[in-house]
Length: 278
Ligand code: AMP
Image (spheres, rainbow, N blue to C red):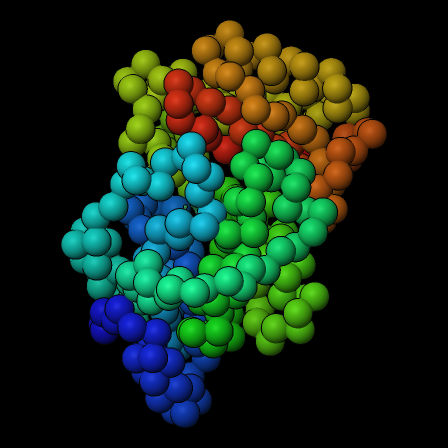
């Protein structure tokens, strides 16, 4: 496995692999890896013959009051985990490698970027699409794997790929959870013991919604109100709970098979997201 900090070396190494006829798979991450990330790496390994993983805490996707400084990092551990997974190349650039002085170009997927998480995190998805497009141009992958935990992100990236005619296949992997149902996240480390315990209500409320739907409930407002109550009773501060169409991310009038229930909730200062498909 190669560890590379410079984009020009990534380009060189990937070009050599492509010359040998290898399909290039790519998993972009912000590091501090957990089983969720590794499940995506395994998908990439199955679908491609040369796997690249990036580790980069992207400053442009953090708001001024957000956790850029405190975001957890452990490069040494990440490298060990990726080596075990049989990754071929790890790209861990410095901030200035991605955003050199004078950097001024941004990519924005309109509409989809200003709903759901885009409301309380203005500019977040603009930062995501900008860095992801840059990483795509550096790595030049054939297949890229994203997690469905960040469902909105995956929808936005797919839109960008289609709109900008990128020759890349986007694949999504299912949400990997802790034993008690909490979706794995690098940010779970911020939670106090009590918050961690209470945060299990997120998945419980999603599973409850799915059961209500299976039981014949079709009114999204009724389901959303109940979910809010469940979450607030456990000390969560709801940013949003919505029932939306999987493709457009627009609220649905009636629940149907395939409706996406999405939520973002604060426990203390920590903002957690999760979702389930009916
Ligand atoms: P991040 O490092 O948080 O930017 O995430 C990198 C990738 O891992 C994104 O595509 C996420 O959707 C994905 N991911 C994060 N957590 C999980 C999880 N619990 N299950 C599946 N994928 C995840």
